[in-house]
Structures are given as structure tokens and as C-alpha cells.
Image (cartoon, rainbow, N blue to C red):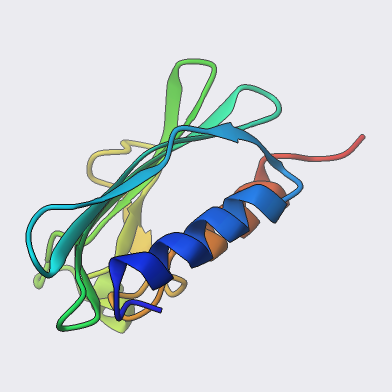
Length: 138
């Protein structure tokens, strides 16, 4: 799936078009050179939940080279994921360098992120997590 911008785009847009929880999105995937692409934009859900997405993609290496995923609700940042290494934090070793920032002290409170990878799309995991944890059906 990470072998070309066409195959990645197809998979991502199919997911966004069929995910019941997604209300609308501004996701765009575009080339930044012969083998590099960028995915960025917002995915909107009910209950004023927004997922902000950024990925830099390398289609020769078939990898996500960099990413940032932020989850917001009603103008408040709930949590974010990044891959900045924190080698001195042994609690993050199991998913190094992938981790999640969350309250309390969102900047410094980090937990492992076993659902993220450089080798496959992360958007399915992120959407499922939002559905499971933030979009409760009454």
C-alpha cells in the first residue's frame, strides 16, 4: 500500500469514504518529489471531534518517514501522537519511538503507542480509537 502515491491515496480515500464515523474531511495526498508524498488535513467527526493529520511518505522505502496526529474537541486539544525519540524514558521503550501525549500535563505525559507504525497506514487505527473512546452512543 505504501508502494506508490496512487495505491496509498486509493486506500486512504476509500477508508475515509466508508468509515461511518467520519462526517467530512480535508485530507489531501500530494507528491513532493519523485518518490516522496505528503498527506495532510483534518478528519471531522460528531461531537466536535477533529483529527489533524500530517504524514511525510517515502514510496521507494515504502515507509511513513514522519507524522503528527492531533485530536481536538471543541477547540481543546485532547491528545497527540508523534515519533520524537525519548530514549531516556523507559516507559516508552516498547513502542519506541511512537508515543502518545495526553493529560495531565499533555506536553510531558507520554504513553506507548502500540497501534502506530512507519510501515503501514495509521489512519485506520486513529479512526477506530476515536470511535471507541470519544464517540459514545447514548
